[in-house]
Amino acid sequence: MNLHEYQGKEMLSSFGVRIQRGIVAQNAQEAVAAAKKLTEDTGTGWHVIKAQVHAGGRGKGGGVKLAKNLEEVERIAGEIIGMDLVTPQTTAEGKRVHQVLVAEDVYYPGDNEPEEYYMSVLLNRATGRNMIMYSTEGGMDIETVAEETPHLIFTEEVDPAVGIMPFQARRIAFNLGLSGNAFKEMTKFVTALYTAYDKSDASLFEINPVLKTSDDKIMAVDAKVTIDDNSLFRHKDYTALRDLREENAIEVEAQESGLNYVDLDGNVGCMVNGAGLAMATMDLIKQAGGEPANFLDVGGTADAARVEVAFELILRDPNVKAILINIFGGIVRCDRVAQGVIDAYKNMGNIEVPIIVRLQGTNADIAKELIDNSGLAVMSATEFQEAADKVHEVLSK
Image 1: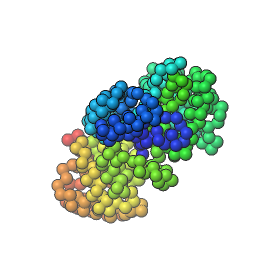
Image 2: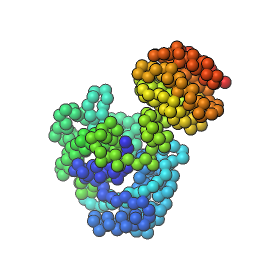
Image 3: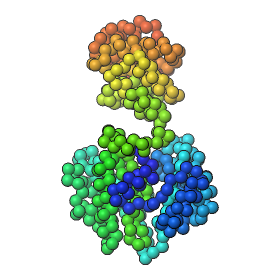
Image 4: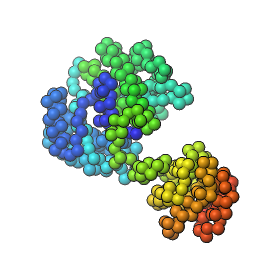
């Protein structure tokens, strides 16, 4: 589950991480009121207006702008709210902006020049340990830094059973070239950031940039936070932070129907039971010359109603040229699945997309006979290769 920047910052602040303060606004008038409140509380004269969408690169798309007075706050907020923001991490259509974060200006003059760093916390799956990735090149795409100057990216692995040790926080501050009060501030920041990641059961905390202000304070100017969905039962309050407007509408509907669905960019729809078989089926489609249009796990109860919902979700994608149903009948009988496919097909009327059905397991022979004798434009297959050949055949027409 992804969080908005303002939500991520509130979470960080609750764990003692210093943040760039801000107030979320739903319209231009609220933005002005937020700016006035920030000026009273922080003394800031300028304000940063930030579009709140689940995508990076907002500044490149015009979603982050500086306002030097209240008139500019109102104008900029009015321009950003309601716009379709296109960034390197959105589709060509962009994402509709429903709210902005009005934040304090933290690049104020002082004894030193402000400096920006990059920092993230995530799981290193190769070692089974948490990893802090950081760089002196803050404010830039970390992918660009990795490609052009990989020697400027550092990592610190943390044993999750022990947690981050003081010497590790000090090493990070040292590698970032800090000294004096900024060094001490960074060690506190890193320790609090790791604690927030660990205690919130997050799968990612990305702060870009981490700012060293002109008076040597260390703070999070941005926050990208992803919470592990599997941990939400431990964090009931986090569920309220979910913004369904930012998520794929088909994926949300599928979840409400008890289906595991992920939208992809291919041309062959998949309907499978079991995540492992789904991954193998996607490989099968690739080998047959196609591209999977989705990941769809219907689970162990693939009855007619469930299959019909799955059909409807897949067919909403105009790029789908064929559908491959690949079910292993262990808990559920193959003949019941076959009957579900037939009933769903008849209920939905004329389906113009070719359908290939491969059913293996309990009563697979009965299921194949049901499909073959249904009189519907549905092709049955027994082996993986046979299913792949039929996918290739329908895509070649």
